Image 1 (cartoon, rainbow, N blue to C red):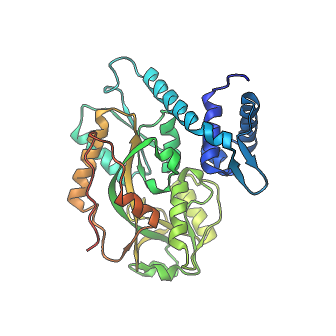
Image 2 (spheres, helix red, strand yellow):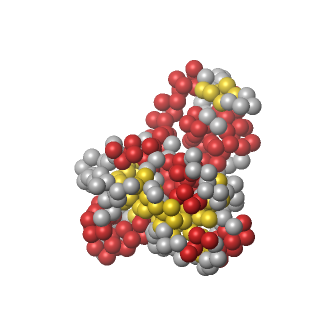
Image 3 (cartoon, rainbow, N blue to C red):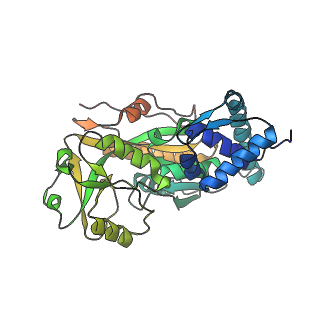
Length: 341
């Protein structure tokens, strides 16, 4: 047996084991499905054992695959920690720039970052835009990103286990409609009014898989159709063109950016909320994390970010995360989410 412990191959094994689906695993790894299949075959041949049983419908771990999985997790975690340490020169961990991902110029993450920069001018924050937490988590695992913001409940348990996260806001959702749409005349849109409409929630954009997952839960049983998978859309003008051409409505938050020829309307009856968390690598030690957490706490206290209005709605998966948040011990203080009144 050859000793093959290439982190790329180990990560391929781990992601397939978590997803039990080659197409989804390939999307998470940003590789072609054929490439992923070859990597798994290479690993199986090198180790001299079968890791997965697969047919046209199912993928399952073999007993040997299940036995090796915990060890592979530990090896990858150790490799990631070593890589991050080697990228940091001695004594510079607290001085290096903290790379922070935000969704767009008007998002919760952007507001938190702006306040942290104002209140901690001695720290260097570098802004990146990855658009979705799914993509951001993958880049955190590789050490290319430090902090992001988004819906933790939509991240698989495997990757989530390497992260710390703090609930910072319940963000009220809205629907974006063309200015000539029948719903544009309403000040607020009841969810029932979306029956028969097609709602865009970024299906097909694997960077934002957690958002599409939320939309499926929201639309279930409400006769609202999700737009089919569509390539990732770049830029506000192209976004507006695509939505108007297809006559799609857009599920988004009240803090979403302005889009030409479209208007934003709050959703009601019930009021759908998304639980926005600040997310960072568990091994990360940097004063910028506390500065961001402090900024989120300040904004949240001033604007009632953790208030849940009467008649609000969250998916069951999100409620479980909200009720049992996973915070780092000692790095920042956990929030106390208030119940609807």
